[in-house]
Image 1 (cartoon, rainbow, N blue to C red):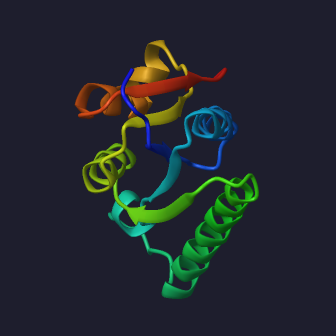
Image 2: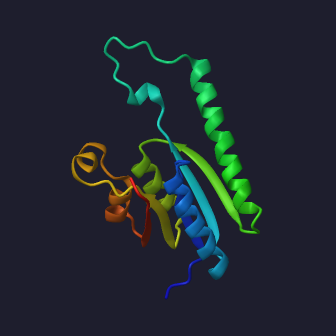
Image 3: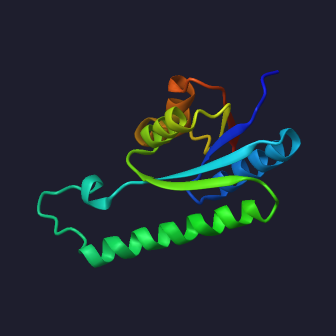
Length: 148
């Protein structure tokens, strides 16, 4: 088995991400790896339809970003309390692209991420970040499935 020294764990603050992080923490403790947490922030200005739409104010956008940063700081602190090395970043962009870009930058030995396990029309409409990452990542990806 390859030495695992860096584990990238994308988090969206959902129960599925928490389950994946718990798995990544346990693995990191066993092998002495450092955890890299990453959260993808999609700016609502770029995601929401623009026709006839009055976008959120700079104050609202700043508040949203501050809440995300605060939540990420809590997740990072929870990992650090377990004696694990941890880095946490909030990066802007489409979730699958953020994960792949973070993997290219940090060069993890493994990505551990949650998947909602959607099937059928929900999978077609919503898509799967985990599926794209599995297909496009250059390192192994371990998915932790949670109920949808």
